[in-house]
Length: 338
Image 1: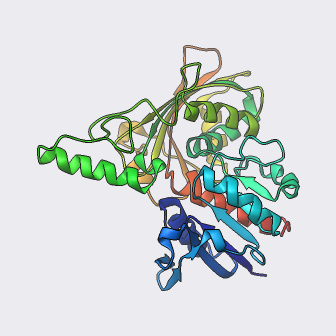
Image 2: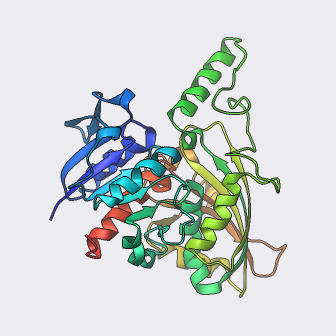
Image 3: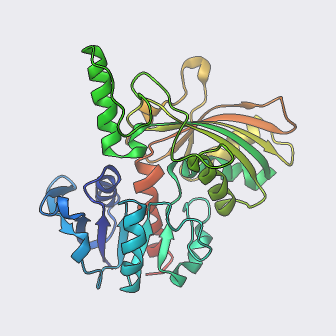
């Protein structure tokens, strides 16, 4: 059986990855529709190497007869159009934060909590988690299963692509401009991003944390376990693609590095590359274009009882967004939900 699929936000960085991954994975499509805002109507986007799709206007697009819609067009657009698509009988997989914490909307990482999909028909909307949350919970899940996580302290090093194509352009333009003695003019970011790091992703909340840091906490608890305590420091770094995280985990029960490595090595979607003395650890540049979440520098954290530390890296446009959305669609097909 094949399905009619719409990609909303098809001209953006994540939308174009969604189209590419649908093609790469051989997802059973009958028709694929590229949908975006009015200013992109008539443009062409790639679906694989040989097919070009003409972009259609979201405002007038009819979701009747569309089986799955992958949304990556921003929160305001999702808030307006995702319910419209869902009401037409289309299953919406939304990449924005709009619906993530709504009780009737499943928040899903297929390797971690596929059982959450069971209730998706209540709204016909499934939420894709935050990019930094996705890669972290993939690394944490096999450990939580054997030793139960009590607390996580994480510092993220997030690439500019997480803020969209204009953010990538800003890093490029600022970097080039600095070599030409031009003063950087921040537009997308609050401060200069070239040759700098910015501890500010999304808006600040009353307690001093950012919305991005809050997302990691509440999403991890919804996906993995509401009993997990988590504190995050989320930082934007001058890297085009690929998020990295320094993750420190405290467990309820003893867990050795060897046992943790064994559990991770057996877990779907997770690759352990961990011989740092030989230079075998993964950096963001090396994960670009890959499907897996990579774990390196797995070691004991001696500052807490039952503690481990690790370095977690993934392509944020792929596993952190587009790939996870397509994998959700694949799971719906595999489990006979469609």
